[in-house]
Image (cartoon, rainbow, N blue to C red; front, side, top):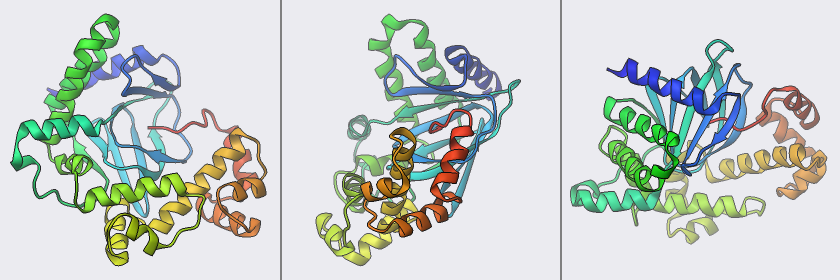
Length: 302
């Protein structure tokens, strides 16, 4: 049953993209992607969402962990995570085709209220990223969502219903607990989400674990332990990745030199910035930027 539906999904993504790149759609939470070559590794932030590949496959690296997903498996992200991603199965004859649907915490919360207390209790704290098997009801709902792009006047009424069904299918599936983390009003998961948002807003500023722990009403040891359980890295490692990714973006988009970009994101020592940049990206800043500019479509892939 899955194969015909997957083929239908691939045909829809191909039709609504047509050329390589990132393709926003008239359905705001939905974005489509097409690439006809395998990609170099890209660093970026994955925000909460559902990622489905209609054709091809991809690697996503979080901390020291590697996730591979393809037509048979979706990627689910429940918190903002700095990752490294790479399309590994693509060609002009069989391009990589995928989509991402942003997830709405408010809609997740509303669904959990409708589902009752049994779905809102005992939310386990786990990694903020997972790969799960695509089942027919979820895939069918996603295909129906894409078909709405052919009928723009239907989007305002029917797209919210399709998105609600997709969220429901995810909540009731194997990885539903990760979505319940998004909507939990209290508890460790929500405190870690608050800590992540705080670091994102203040990544260029130095901070102490003790101060952040007070901000989110946790002990320092508890924050460190639970933050790593969700993100596969410590708060300071998370901050460092945000700094380096933003510095790279500044050098690419604003033509800043390495010293200026490093200073902008919070580094006081150009030598420390260059050293950490090389350790994270594999090359010193100028050589890395030269390689990036030669690459096709130097964009964040989903």
